[in-house]
Length: 130
Image 1 (cartoon, rainbow, N blue to C red):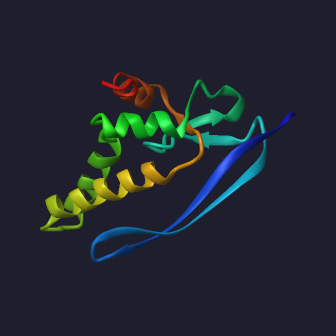
Image 2 (cartoon, one colour):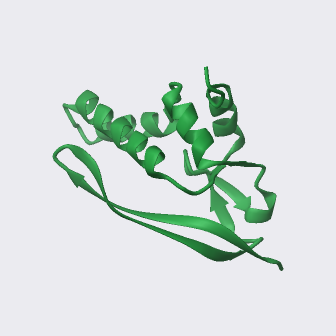
């Protein structure tokens, strides 16, 4: 087993009347063994072990993709389905808040993003400046 140093970020958020509010962000280097389980930072799909991760993107490339129009469609669809199942009547308005909150998290992120194959494929065309 190999120990690796990875940058990590913990974001503390609260749900307010105007959407998710970022209260605090903690940055640190964390020790992680290469067999630690990881999941996609966009859709939360389990990816296996850290040593098997294929796609790691810089926070800058994720910000560029977001500014070029990328939206986390899988996450948004799952959120919309959850709101509909709960009988939420203003789900369109809430979905706009969720997307704006996600954009805010992207803009403030300073650590690399781990992506599954599907999220990598969906974001790669948005990563270059147009």
